[in-house]
Image 1: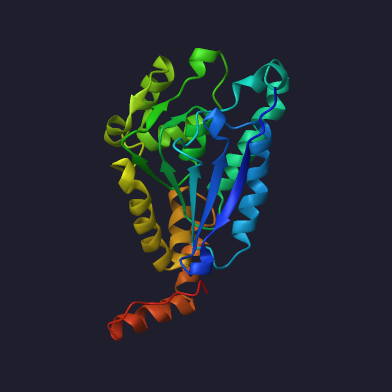
Image 2: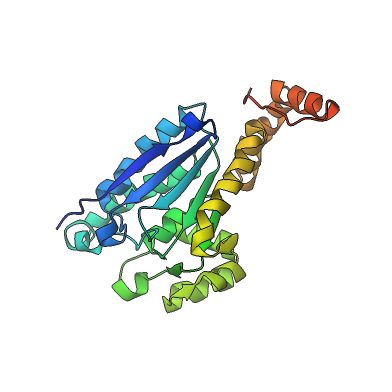
Length: 256
């Protein structure tokens, strides 16, 4: 059986809010990621990167679930033996596209966020969860190898001790523990999640894009971080920021 789910891009920038959404869309399978869904992500991120009106990208699941993992119904055909090499590369390209996105990426998490779904969430810069969120790193229950880049991001996010616990027990845990160990940045009730994410996105979209790009590069340890930071000092946005401060108004940054 092959997944019929899709990943789609929604843009609300017509309202001049600078926000686009990458939506994992297969509710009958709790938004489990089929290989075709992973394969679609890089092209959609390229669209985001090419749209100067987008200032922040939200990743979310359609309906009441973020993502239950990779689609296990595909594993027998696509992950047994050496077939896993191609599958893993397709998945790696998807998460790499997210981590390399031109704009900050925010994950809005409801319901299950497990396995491959958690790998997608870990590729975001910020993660906000509803109190019904449920997390797990379950490869040990299946016998698959969890992608090494996902393990690296897990360790970088929550530390080696907590990552070891999750990988070696494959246990499920809720939003409160996810907040305590630093996996998510905030937890609110289900009815408040959209408002929280919208508020954080509005803040991000109002800030200087070049500054945020340099900060994200530095946080990721990228070699271009110093050059990106230096470019900020030669930007029209810095002039605008100084002028807005002097005039006691909000700045209007143009990413230039």
